[in-house]
Image 1 (cartoon, rainbow, N blue to C red):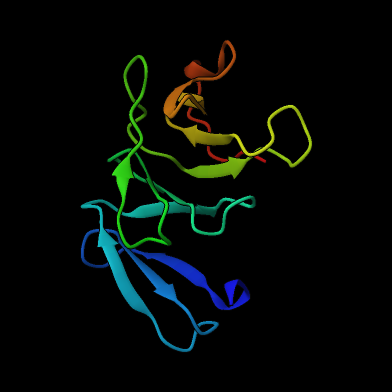
Image 2: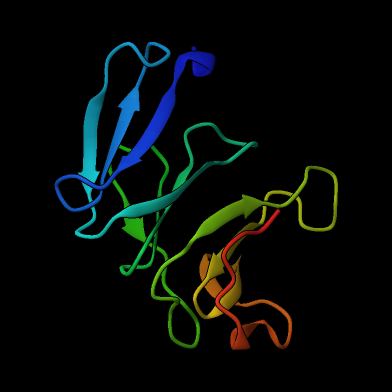
Length: 130
């Protein structure tokens, strides 16, 4: 069941992602991004949608519980990585929208691409977002 699925990002083998289907008793390597996986977020509206933020190789997403990943591109350049990821609260104006705290400010996923969110955050190395 979905309650038994867990994900872990480790700094071995160049930033691998591991998944447990049994509540953490056993783990299987899914992907190696070539850079540490710093943030992992599961979409609260779709448990098959997983997003990973790396330290220096951008933001990646999977729609099959981590079996395959594709990099989320940016409209005007791309953040080099993501320290933290957050999905907008259900029933709010940003329901299900992905946000990323990055070294280049706060980014939001709009029409499948990452773009700078708001004005002014690009001047900051944003570490967390909630």
